[in-house]
Length: 79
View (spheres, rainbow, N blue to C red):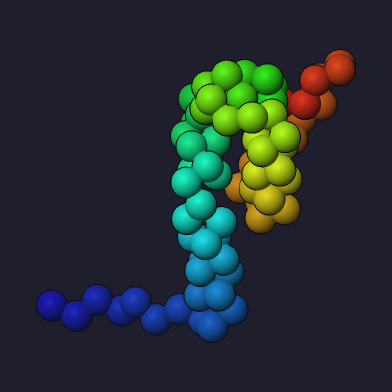
């Protein structure tokens, strides 16, 4: 059985970049912590056990890659 798996070079590069972002274990833990609901950074810190500066750093990378989207609610940013 033949399955056509051809994709454009641009699409392949974007997909590879997406998987590269998720290949970092800390970022993967953060994404998993965000799968059920939007959470403020403090909740992500608590759920992952990672230090707050590290969570913020990885959330920025996830945001820049389009994996996480910030939502400001009062004095908190939810992802």
